[in-house]
Length: 568
Ligand SMILES: Nc1ncnc2c1ncn2[C@@H]1O[C@H](COP(=O)(O)OP(=O)(O)OP(=O)(O)O)[C@@H](O)[C@H]1O
Image (tube, rainbow, N blue to C red):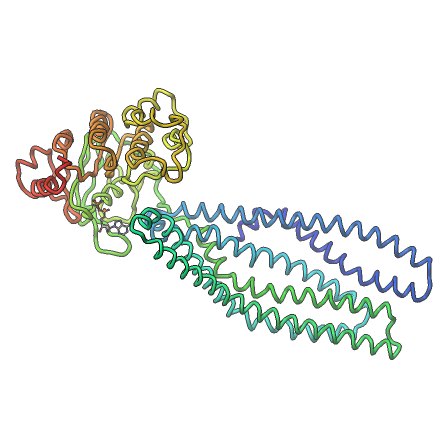
């Protein structure tokens, strides 16, 4: 938050300056009232005209300054929320993969939407109001002292009482606000889950369950907010009662002073007006202080997210891949859980093609993620052309690898954009990628070819079409290392075969394919098959060698082929 405020220092200064000017000028109304009433009671027409003229000038200036303050405070709120959102978003993306996946994405969504809104309503706006009202309070105090020190002393006594109240509520409100923020995060998470699960909910007739779950979460979130609002209501009503009590005190004492001949009628009106200008600000400050105190946990959460930067610090060496990618005694486990990669040593040669196979959950995807620098907290050594992966520049390393996952993420744009992803490529490169990925086959059936929209997360395309786009997305970048993580599993056998066999012919490309497809013809085209079992490499060799050995891979291969005959 502090950085965001520092970023908009100038606007903040302008806002504060005009806040002071307009607030202080507002207090002068009391003096105008006093003078005009006393002039009227004395029947002084000359003085009356003079005050009238000055009042018109004063009114004009008040209007102009008020407008400037209002505009600059709104611009300040806009700029602060923009900066905060940008800083949180940057923080979320600067997390390493392990830290990012430790939280639910809905938590991030909630921080970027609900929490920022909470900060606007319960921190930025109240802070501006408090500052403005402090000025009104101070200016009123000066004028009050000038008019009647006795009334001022009584008012100050009442104020002390009024200030004591918010401190009683502050701590409890802090706890309640923290609960509101957490509950909103849970609510967003459930909502996201239900909306993302639309297809499952529909196909399993879970509509009633979804409605019931939503209803419960909706009520829970609303009730937790209401619990906080109840406390605000109590705080506000106590403050209001005390404020009215204070005004009563002023009126009765001032009236007594008039009866005893110690005060003019004009001064009474001015005092009543000022006591409003004195009590009002204290009231606003009292209402806002607990809000500002209460928002602390949300502020800390936002600051924590915005300041995160746990990307690995490397020596920034430029990665070179001309020979091999090697792992020695590699071990890894996720934050909570048992070891997933137990002890793996292997060497992948540039330009060779590898099929990584094994039972579900044995660690294939994790191994590839480790080899391509996705996770950092492993034991053992990974080297690219003899250089420790941990010494290499992460961004450049990421630029050497393309991964095609089973679930392809599609941006809500057209096909071309989803392939090129904001970059420009020559037409020949785009054509080659379209051919190799098999996109040209379905492109002729789309309404606008490459410019056809894909819909939210590619919903207007089939799974296979999405995967073909992902293949083109990877190929057009011409990266030396391509990972197919079940990357053609949603494509029909014939097209998948065509795509994979084309990839296998790209000489310069090092290909690692994670697959459950035991197609003999296709597997036979790979240089090596790496067979994993429970976090280790159980066997490695060409299809022919492994089948001849007749050991673990052969049993797995035979079993898979029996289970999925179509795959053979
Ligand atoms: N982000 C994660 N956090 C915690 N555990 C994980 C995470 N990703 C995977 N795992 C666990 O690690 C183990 C290996 O998972 P991995 O995805 O590497 O297996 P796999 O062999 O690729 O499986 P499949 O063939 O089913 O895709 C599994 O037990 C899985 O539950």
